[in-house]
Amino acid sequence: MLLSRRTGLALLSALLATGCAHAPTAPQSPPSFPGLQYTSLQGEPWPVKRVALPSTSQAHGLSGALEVATVELNRGGPNGTLLFLHGLGSYSKSWRYQLDAFAAQGWHVVAMDLPGYGKSDKPEGFPYTMEAMAEAAHEAAGALGLTRPVLVGHSMGGQTALAYAQRHPGDVRALVLTAPAGFETFTAQEKTAIEGAFTVERITGATEKDIHTSVRVANFARWRPELEWLVEERVQLAKDPHFRAYAHANVRSVSGLAHNDGVREGLGRISAPTVIVFGEADLLIPNRFMHPGTTRGVMEVGQQGIRGSRLVGLAGCGHAVQLDCPAEYNAAVEEFLAGLSAQE
Picture (cartoon, rainbow, N blue to C red):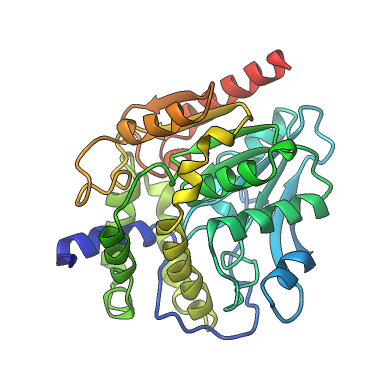
């Protein structure tokens, strides 16, 4: 199966939300994008801490200890811990409308840049599968002393959270799956086509105008001027000398996402209370060039597979639902967490 130019661009737009991909060649050094500023909506800097993951490094034969960057707020918050995991091409700043808000409500809040993204290391030898991402997140949680966190994952981060909960069920309090990847089924031909769509020629030729259009169209239904930082940071990242390592991580992650049927097939093993929050106007799930249908239809697959899970669709909201419709999204999550506490 060959992708049409239109299909390739549609797939490309998913990455252009906050990141991009180049050819899978990456330097061995662990860049951390020092120019990225992690700040609250009010412009207050978030504290960024790097956490070493020696077990993950050893498991994948990496030279030196892999380190990931984390943002931590309100340690000791009485409600428990929320661990936020971002989506493909993104980083902790994608939770800009959530971290301070939930910390103010009494939650201990931690956001993690997954390996290859944001201020975390970007080793070429890391496999970037969802299972490897989940193990990295689990080791980071242990290193930070997090006890049974609620995992809040967006898109790729949602699929990572699913793998985490399947592999370490006793270490997860609950799951907040935000427009999660992992429920959609792809044939072998479709997987090959998806991987083939991410080439250096298609991506390096993108102009700033192309990036802006892709960000708005692919991920948002309610674009606002205050979101322009997404485009500005993406353009600046492309000028960073370490961008190729980050791009390599994107390419490998796409392969990891495509070849991950085990997560969907193992939904029945998840025992943690779960809510699935998604935008009804999501243009990325399902891939409509391959699978005509609705986002709700895909998310229902997950709801049916995870016993007792809840499904919350937000009308008029896109794929980056936590950024596109923050008030509605936060309210849905707050309701779920309140019910969780009451149940316990």
